[in-house]
Structures are given as structure tokens and as C-alpha cells.
Amino acid sequence: MIEFKNITKSYNNGGPPAVANISLRIERGEFIFLVGPSGAGKSTLIKLLFREIMPTAGRLFFLKRNITEFTESELLRYRRRIGMVFQDFRLLKQKTVYENVAFALEVLGQSPRKIRQKVPLALEKVGLTGKEKAFPSELSGGEAQRVGIARAIVKDPLIILADEPTGNVDRDNSKQIMKLFEGINEGGTTVIVATHAWELVNQLQKRVIALKKGRIIRDEQNGGYDTEY
Ligand code: ADP
Image: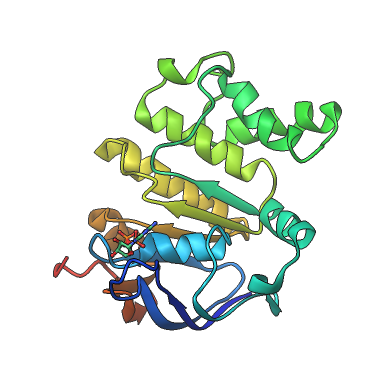
């Protein structure tokens, strides 16, 4: 489904490339943890996948099409199929929980009827039924991230990309968040999570891709988090 072919990204800051000559295949329905120390290149891989940034060299395929060659309209269509989850949640402060999730569909031009159908289902999946009217400032970190996940899944994405999704969430809630990703993945969605949460990586036993200085140093099915980090 996704293929990185000799992808290198340099940020033009004179330093070594953030990721160097990465080749990697990800099949539909996989669950992947990207691990590695700070600065290893995890966020860069996620940003490349969302085409927030372009590679300096190499090709990046999604369903056999090179995403670096997408036109603006192809890029918009591609991004519709990706749900992003951020460490800092990125909720709209002046909108309620319900409105934050609904907004993800409004910007895609979906009908009010569809939105009324889908938003409650997404909120139910993340266990936030009853919190529809709350504002982000009234939520715990765990709840805010569950809104972030509801917003990502409400558009039925093919891929979920999450960059340190438990970075601002306490330990118990982090476990819940990872369980949510696991459930979403069991429904067929490809899930890619960059994380430092080593205990959860060890517990979930998914494919683990470890990066160091922009290179893949380990790629294991049912892997764990190396204590080296
Ligand atoms: P990680 O997510 O594993 O912490 P990043 O992908 O954020 O790693 O960073 C990889 C390398 O790229 C680091 O050396 C970082 O300083 C550098 N980098 C990341 N973003 C930028 C940027 N916008 N400009 C310059 N250098 C950057």
C-alpha cells in the first residue's frame, strides 16, 4: 500500500539528512510503531507520508502512485484518506467536542445528514458519548486525545498517522489510547504510530521499525522497544 524507495530528506540546514536512503514497504491493514530517540527521523517520515514535506530524493508510493508527483487536487483527495493524530491534539478551542469532530467532515463538504449520522458513532467508538457539549479546555489530556482520534476516524480513513499521540497523556490513558488504535486497526485501517511509549510498544507486540540518525536499524514483526533508547 505504501512504499518508500530510497527516500532521503535534508532540511537545508547544513546538517546530515533527517532521513537517509529509507526503503520500506507497508501493507494495507498493518499496525506499525516507529520508535527511536528524539531526532531519529520519526516525525519526518510521518510528514513525508502526509506530504507535508517533500523528499530531497527518492520516491514514495501510495497504492502504486508516486505521491511526490500528485497535483494539488490529487493531494487533497489523498489527504482525505488519511487521519492525522497529533501530540498536542490541535483541537479548535472555540468549538465543542461535537463541533470539532463535525468540522472534519464539514471541510470535506459532507452533508449535514451524513455528519449527524457519523459524528455520534465516532464519539461512541472513542468512549466520549455524553461529552459532546464540552469545550477542549474542559477535557483531560486523555479525553482531548480521544477527540483527536474521533476527528481522525470520522472520515473513514485508509491510514491513521499518529505522531507521539500519548506525549501529553498520563499513563493509564495512554494505554487506552493505544487500545483504541489497536481496535481501529482491527477494523482494517492501517495505523502508523511514532512513539516513545516503550511499555506500550512492548505490550502490543506489533511491527516495530526503529530509526537512528535517519536510518532504519531494526524492522521486526511482533517487536518491542529496545532499551537502548
Ligand atoms: P523525531 O521525530 O524522531 O524526533 P525528526 O524527524 O523530528 O525526529 O527530526 C529528524 C532530524 O531533522 C533532527 O535532526 C531534527 O533536528 C531535524 N529537523 C526536523 N525538522 C526540521 C526542520 N523543520 N528544519 C530543520 N531541521 C529539522
